[in-house]
Amino acid sequence: MSHENLLGGPAPTLLPADGADATARATLATGVDARAAVSAAPASSLLWALLAEQSDDAVAAYAYARTGYHRGLDALRRAGWRGQGPVPVAHEPNQGFLRALLALAEAAAAIGEDDEAARCRQFLADCGTSADEVAALR
Image (cartoon, rainbow, N blue to C red; front, side, top):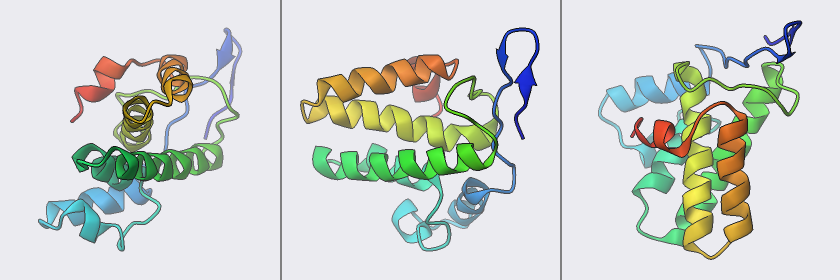
């Protein structure tokens, strides 16, 4: 849960350790690929990010990434996020959302949706991270 930071801005939002991405990670650890794991954890941003990262089709990557992004926004809101404030990349449960956001930026750029790509990169910065930090998770 997130609460107001009296020293200047909202507290960091930390997604729960037992969320959909935890189920996804456990399923992936059994050797199942991301596409097959979706049925075990369809709300996982991580799985949708992986599908986007692995896709050779920019349009499909965009659709996968957008799905992961929206699943992540839903999870962030349930965790108390109110549209602003840090979403720390060092907190593993946040990483699926951040990877989906980066994948969306990349796929948007690949299909010529430059304004959206720029918005997504700015959103990463607003979360307190960078495209390079998130890309290093791959």
